Length: 318
Image (cartoon, rainbow, N blue to C red; front, side, top):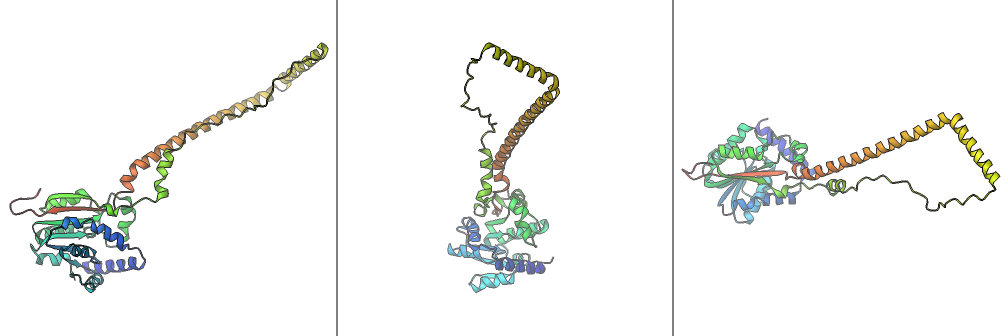
């Protein structure tokens, strides 16, 4: 799409998310406040893609002179209505006419809208627009954030690609900047919902699986001595012997089969207990792995930044 078409689509998108209530102005302000210390003592700062002008307002509160440009006419009109020095302009048309004019350039959530050739053009033009010792700060979505990868990056139809911190550092060095540094913006962190964040710890604290032994009745009493007459005891003994003989001859197969079934069920129960113990151990390992890796995939900041300084004549880049 052309820059004009991009502007129309992006303007319509931001109008939509505002009307849908998806924009948290207070949260956006906290994210932008993180960058203000990098521009302390700067005399004149350019905000590329200034949007609603929040960063310009933050700099103004700190006594720092700044101007902004943005493609979206509605955004620009909102800024000018609030007395902010913002004009509608394409950065590739604006920057060539402002060589060595600024000692600070802020570019937030712009580079992800550009393919690599245009990203290089942006950095070269920003380098030219800076005075020696001036700082360029790029802020963009964090490709190491799972939330960005699965959701936030794809909400905007004009997004082109993500830029890793190490790639931003390289691009700054390649275009002549020095004293390069990068990091995550902690104000843009995504916090796990409490119930989801608790799952790894709950799994890790599960008690070991233990089979419950059968309960033995404590009311059983030892049998009393047999005090019957000798003949009666003898007849009873013969009856028991006859019963044993019958069982051993007539019911042997049935009793043997029943015994085998009982043994099989005991083995199945033991196997089930072993499987449950193994499953529980696996769940504990999964829980611990989630706990250890959540900071890598789920909780890193959604926004990263990289900055570089335009060296004075003769210093060269690092």
